[in-house]
Image (tube, rainbow, N blue to C red; front, side, top):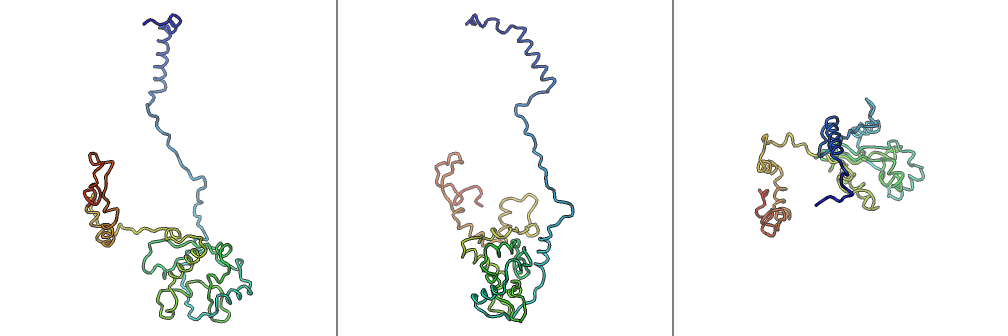
Length: 269
């Protein structure tokens, strides 16, 4: 097939040769171009670095206050919630009287048995200003001693559970949960789950687990079951473990209902 007349000699040989030389010269100068360009590495920098030696003073004070020992108040002034609210109102107690805006709900009485979660960060003033109807919502009793403070710490009345001097009072951990979660449920506002209020603090297994340098899966399972036997039994009866059905990812068994963790799945050991 002949080239149409209007396109004949459109690209003379000398022009083609010149373009090829330019292309080769470009490779020599610029280097070979990779088929897949490398992505530029992103460099992240802190535009607002923390000054050296800086500490959060509110957090520091809250931690120190959370470890302080509190004298136990055995005798409290018995009065109905309505009477107490009215009396605090007449005294004019309000947000401006709050001494500690922020606190950590952490105490040895709370962590005496287990410590799997970090302490709750409680914004005292924010709750008093926006959510509480009165200081009496939380400070529901005061010491019976004349002239005592109207708003004492929770740990002054609630300490270890089943305290001999106050069997009618719940422990501090239960008091926190009943007061906080009870209010959240009643108002239908605020979190009620563990991780919603606490930062999870996973258990450090480095000193609890003994495994070889390159353990087999069966060895890992046996080591876990050494402490978590009940969880292991629950796993065997779960729908996840007993599932049976086809698998679209197993060649030749896409419609086989016998495949599943309940039968011959490869990790069912």
